[in-house]
Length: 347
Image (cartoon, rainbow, N blue to C red; front, side):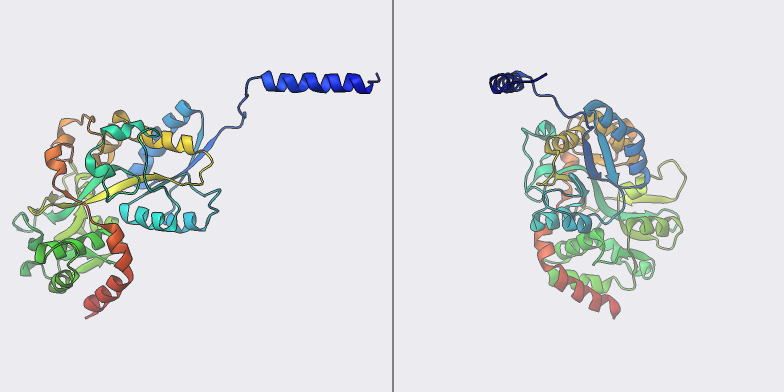
């Protein structure tokens, strides 16, 4: 069949009109959301229940990276096609990511509606993104060593605990960094009083230092240390196991160890990324994870079972005990702090 020029033009015009009139058909390809997440019990619940439910509801696939550290991988990836769409990290690393320009500065309730129901600390000026859960950094201790239950951060310095107290390698662990700032507040003029903090750190020697909280957990469980700095979930997860360990909330307050989610500016599935953060803030999802890993939920509408409600930070009164460090301030001084701490602990 041949077609003259007029017929060809008429056919082309008709095809163009149909193209303009036809509804948009979305790509049949399943969207992929790339996130970071923790391992352990958290990872089991996420991969076994929480993420599959999200995939079913939003008809997507979630790729979850559990291989820490995440920040170097995100920083090395293309800005227009980042290795992650959602970064899950603690507050100190979210502030570093913001400095690099690889996460958004603020989330908007228009994109994440459940932000309207979170406690103020979860979106305070100390947070980049939103804190979906928090743990309380305080003192873990053995109950079978004849110790008086600690009531103050100063109790860690008791002479009887020489060689039996535990802390962290400050350059690599944010709990150690948070504890250093608390020493400035307890013994000096505030969390930025580094001179007081260094003097107080010196007084804690001899002290056993660990890289990660998992190591501190094992040290307490094995009685390698009798008292140490740790987050509450690292102790409460042994509830009902018969292990002789407990957690104390110092009278001066506890430091917030926040689980923060944020979106990368170059994400190609940004609306799905916002939907994921909103999903993680839903009361039912918050309850499931809070009770699985003993994390305090950020959504004020979460109704925890009695044993969790008794211990976790889930009321305005309890939340008022949480102290949020200024990680932007700390990160700007970290190199100098690391050198000074190294000198103190070498001596």
